[in-house]
Amino acid sequence: MPTKSKRARMMPVKNASKPLVYWSIIGFVVKIIIIVNIQPVYVKIDGENILEINGIWAGSDAEAYLKGFTSLVSDGIFSDNGILNYWPAGYPILIFILSLVSGSWTLSLLAVVQSLLFALSAFYFALQLSKTRLIKYSTLVLLLIIFNPTLSLTSMWIGYENLVASGFLLILAIIIKDLLASENNSPFSNLIMNSVISGLIVFVQPRFILSTLAVNMFWIVFRNRSTKAMTFTLVLVFITLLFPASLVMRNYQATGLPVVSTNLGVTMNLGAGDKATGSYRSEGQGVDCDVIGLNPQEADSARVKCVLIWYFNNPVKAINLFFNKSIYFWSPWAGPEGNGTMGRNPWLKINPLVDISSTPDGANLVLGSFGKFISWLWMAGGFLLLVYGFWILWKHGGTEKIVGSSALLIIGINWLISLMTIGDHRFRIPIMGLSLFLQVIGLKTLLKGGKAPIVGGPSLR
Image (cartoon, rainbow, N blue to C red; front, side):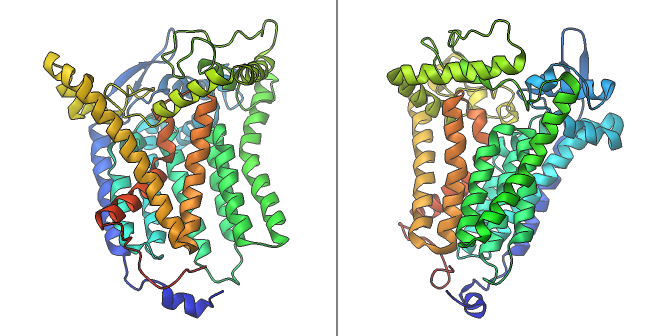
């Protein structure tokens, strides 16, 4: 194992932080300009109430989050509105907390806060990369993350996706920081930070509990090959679970149901059954599950069990659905192969393909055989670059190998979750920062004729 001084000599000496700071500030300032110029729109949050939103776009599930938020404003944190049990209440609660200090500017402040967190997360991730042998990739990684149209613009819409993407970038950045530290340094402070970030991610969307715990456990085991690993794992799990546990307590106090949410079974059932296609566009009714007379918690559990049994009893149909869901998960945002709930994607407002397809000839071009070929080329190219980028990092070993493995672990688990629920390209947004990172590694290496521009000495670990 190299000593601290030897490691220091191995590290790249060039200071790459200045361009990273400049680009991050530019990206954030551009967003502030956009936020100021977003036109007010009216959103119908239920059968009677219409809410005007300013300085932010409506995300795919904006009505549900806004209904939960307005219920919290009117009835308090223990509102018994069913939307707060069906959908995870974490994101509406975050909006509610912002409203305590911002009043009528709550949603505009939400866009600013999400954009600021995204800029800081992307910067910090690129900054940690610049301290490794990946220094020549760091600026390009930052640029493609903060200026990726869909990923970046979703920081200015009502939805959890961008917040989770920021959280995953921070988790990986802290892992890199710890791996580069002296062997004698305790990772405890880094563990606490990653546990809190993981908890917040799970707070706004509980389905990410698997990926957050898995990547942190992977890091803990690698970093602490001793009895400390068990202690650190217990600390990680305890702190992370505190956040969703608070949602369970809120829901139990409000409705008597000790649950985080009750929509998992419904979501899983949308992507299963004899007539399902694997997406929201399925015309079938899913699997026929007997939930008559059950309360929401019992019905949700019964649907989950029912769908899993159907998959087990129908392996061929399940494999076909898993394939379809994979295609939908990696599908483009627009075009003939696009499939998901991104109709409100801000990028579609300026996407040239949308304008081209608005005319008959353009529609034939974009949605016809040529458009399908381009869509499949886009999907296959992006996926292969991701895999190639991971392989490059794996081949070079050391810290870079662990970073690449951590990124792929998060991506793979969230892809797997999509297979068990529905195929939707919106589910790809939270892992886009990491997928773009691996794709940059693959693309830049490919452009260099297969010779990765990784600088420095031998493996750092």
